[in-house]
Amino acid sequence: MNPAGFTFVELLLVMVLIGILLGVGGLAIQRMDPGARGFQDTLLAFLESSRDRARASGHPVMLELSLPNEDFSDPGGFSRFVYRPILEATFEQESQRRQGLQLIPPAELGGAGRFGEALDLSDGGTVVVEGRGGQIRTPYGVDMEVHLYSRDGVACQLARWEDFLELSRRQDGSVRLRLHLGQDQDATSLLLDSPAAVLLPERWQHFRFRAAAGRLQIWVNGRAVAEAAYEGPLAEPKGFLELGDPEGRFRGRIDELVLWGRTREPGPPLQEELLVDVQPFQIWFDRFGMLDTQRHPAPIPVEILENGEVVTSFTIGRFAEEYARESEDGP
Image (cartoon, rainbow, N blue to C red):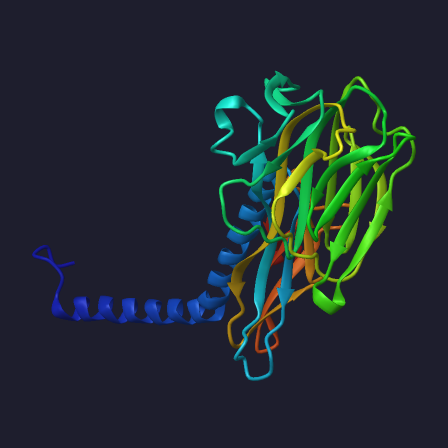
């Protein structure tokens, strides 16, 4: 070895070796297909954020894959359906203006509620909940929950929203919900009745209904009491939500109203030459962000293909996504 340093020949040999190594590395990178890997990373991040959205909202999140058309003018890709609060009312006195509450006497704010103050309808009256302005749209679904306290079990109206819903309590303590579907000449409605004695007087009760993905469900105090299937989109509500009975038959209090709207958010689009093999095309996470075992009894394998060959893959599990480890599966 030359103590003064490398000779020109030695340097040239090192450069040749580096070139060979870079060439081999370039071939390896090409075989890995960074486009497919990048798409996988984007999709994994989208899945994880969907789990987070479910946990944060307390509502299920559904992911859907649409395929591209023949000329790829529409590349298709993933999207998700999530719930966002679009109308809220706590019925605190200082929040009347901010929450857009129009009291119709003898309705008052400030009664003892389940959580602080409540809407006091002990002597009758109604309230119109306008919110913060803007038209409320619920094309993909809606979820409404409210806390109710009634002094008696008289049949009465509980809520009404023009061209959207009517909610009432009947004499036997059952709940009747009429939900409007479609628009104009396609307009129709769905009527759903609960069993008797689900809304009882002289106690606070939590009422909730959800209409989404073709299913209408009613819960009272966290227990499912009625369910029905429907087809087509929900009608668009007109005007504002009215709580209470215009004829004064509801005597009690109302607290903590939240209306959730189900919206669609775009996710990663597909790329030319890349296909995704996943079954089914709809993936559901429950309200805890876990893979819904009722719809998916087993983990869901996902493969990303280029020119018909699998480039990379992973599995959507109950709690998280996992990369496929092909080298560990071999002999």
